[in-house]
Length: 402
Image (cartoon, rainbow, N blue to C red):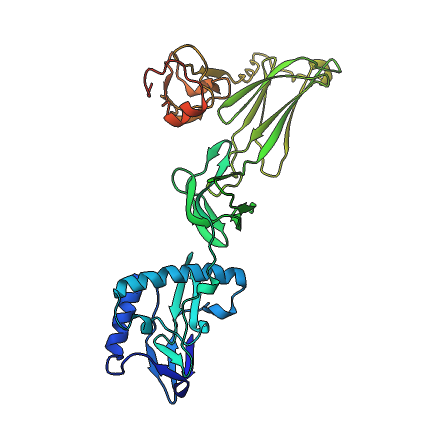
């Protein structure tokens, strides 16, 4: 982009013997320290020209009032930094003078604002020049904010999102830190999953955590002898957690469960099996992202017509019945025997190696018996972190690791 001015319309405020190509390069280098661009003027036939590299440059005069206030504050901050770099040079004010505010240009580039002064060191004839932007600078209360996204009570690390249409990413602790955000301003937030939020900064509120968990409902339906199985005990196991349920008057028991997510904060394509058990009978299904409910129906033998048994040849043996899956219940407790609920732990077995799991709200976790070899001892390790202790009642915590 090129900014042009007729030579006879402007007056140079710096001694012509000083204002040369070498001097302009020195000012550009000093300006880079203050994050302020000073393009070198180029002389044409009857005009001056300043080149701004790249696309997307806009003049300050074309901004809306709200945007002018934001740009003016940022420009004043960089202008003050430039003054500090110049260290009260006698030509400091001349360098920072422009004909009008129309010669302040800015653009957004990779999440940051670039600001350039075209026609710096010049003013129109019979005018004093400008460049302060004091009247556009409003005093606002600013504060730091922390933004995070939660899935099943866990903050998501390294999650990409956009804040005010600029790309951002949470840190390892699951939070993104923004400094000097004006109180009362509203900013759009969008995730690659399609989730959209609106952040309005409130005074004295630092944390803005958005729950993006998606759930499905596991429904157990029990029928016995043609009637609803009222008051029947059953269980549902999913993603390392097991939940004990009792059916209602309609013979149904419901459990709302969170899907397993992927790195983008969406439902993962491959979900673990969901296992429902009743009276030693076991049913397995795998939830899909487009399903709201998994239905497990348990009926009595009388409800299902018996299939005819195939006749066996003389001397042949019937095929063995398939084995029912068996489960191992792991319970973690503190020193006084109270359950360690919602705690992450690592299970190590000979067949599976190290597997990351988590207890439920009763301190339990269910895994398949086939993960263990015969007579193998269970090897479990976990850490009681300070963050965990803040939200859970730990009795007689003798050490941080067990």
